[in-house]
Image: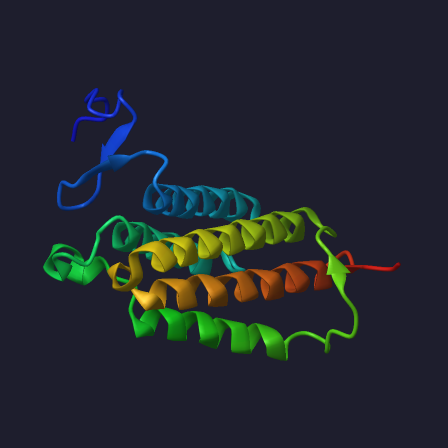
Length: 182
């Protein structure tokens, strides 16, 4: 696969299927943020001991690659990405992990600020990037309607919740959550 083709030098890129669009299109911005999130999760994996959530984070990176492909493919030909779509099973996996994480944590009684230990801070940053990706996918959906897999939005919503829970767990193993006060 050739990396530098020069075809994007004029500010255009190709979606899956060959359609040319501006690099500042909502769809391209959305899958670019998903790519950014995957890279950020790679940083977290590098910072995280192997016996914790590293394997789950790697699975999420694979899911995000599928999600980026999903978003970069308008529903004009679903066969183009039939295997790379976000499916119910991906969302359910996040929900299972979130359920397990919730059981390990005390009930949250006040707002917390991002921070604490290094891993928690990275997880909070990833959570905010996931929220941005979700907003961008919603924007694509608002302009293109049925051209977006609705499970993509649900997946990103569940992922940001999970990253929040994992940040709390990371702090539970060392530093405490930083609480908000007025």
